[in-house]
Image (cartoon, one colour):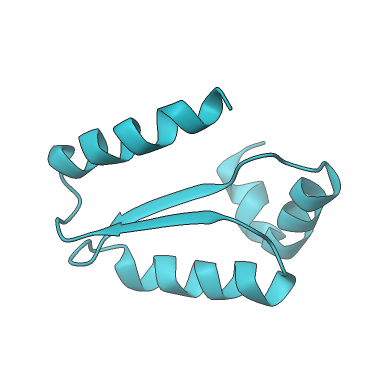
Length: 80
């Protein structure tokens, strides 16, 4: 799906994901990340829809060190 379609109907797209019974929805972000506020709004949207997700918050920003932390946490979940 092209990204613009997702944003045109975010509620519909998320509902479709819920209807498809996803197994894992994982979000990771650093507190000083420039996307932190948008991420906070996105999580509020997920919460209002009753969408379950795993969430990790770290102290670093939008940096490779965080990606390494996130990968070490996220990848094993793919094989559960």
